[in-house]
Image 1 (cartoon, rainbow, N blue to C red):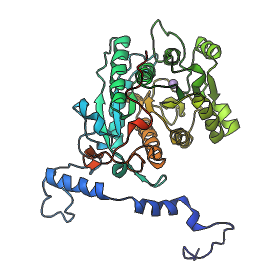
Image 2: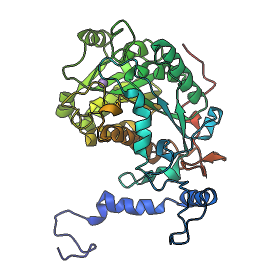
Image 3: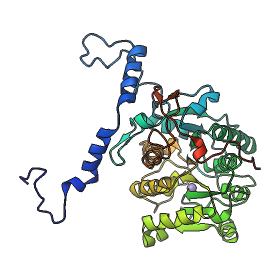
Length: 411
Ligand SMILES: [Mn+2]
């Protein structure tokens, strides 16, 4: 091809300027860079000027910013560690780890999930061409660390998780929760629902239906949606379960789903309807009579060959491109919180499973920025004194857009 870019194309109907990639290059150029510049200045102040032989004088002696990606102390996206949890309200978004795997019924190891997601997140600097967003520039985010779980006691751990999630909700910060096995899916919803005045729907991606009352006599990672849909403002008719199927899953769980009439969308349904349409239908059901939707993403909804680092892998699941697209579609409608569960690093030999969990979070946050739900594009404006991903002051998000902290406490 000897054509220059702006000559008309010989490909019928093709206009180079209509490419998302080309258009987004321009959009990204419009996003300011002042937060990056402040971050660089802060690194220089804290990390000592580099040795004389270094030509790039933004480099420091001690790594104090996002670079090198493989260096430094790994919080999620190298966001500031919110060690004093009372300061979590200074951030739009809080990453919260729940290192708990006592609810596991097969392979353990998800207690190391939050740390593995933090570790691989260092690869990313928060900007994205597909969505034309720059998380570092456009949202303030902290890593709230981990919940103090009680490995020998599921019920006490549930109370700890409920209290932690409630606290972050009451502070008005958007929670990004990383497990842990999926048993945490009950207390996460409990913590959110009791702080929300209105009904909450759930969009649940998983290969497993997870709706038995008990498994092996306890509330294991196969039971959370039985208990979550007993919460008065979390109704089973607004639970949509996407990707369910395969050969692992107790029949009595299916009986509960039938009795409660939850909506089950199999991989076959996704194939038949097409993912866009199936997710559109899922959102209609999840939102019906609700004021908010919670997103639960079990990494095992992705094919076990691509995401092997998980507790109960299953072949025949989604490919990452499909899963991420579906997640973006759910996020675009608005969500009150999200969780990513079932990443088990001991089985995750290439970190691909943790990376996919990290991408799920980035794609959801990027979509929320793009749709002006959070961050500096949000109509709610900036809150002074908040901090950007690498510790610089940045704008904020008015949580009252979806949450009234004074709302009636339930349950
Ligand atoms: Mn599962």
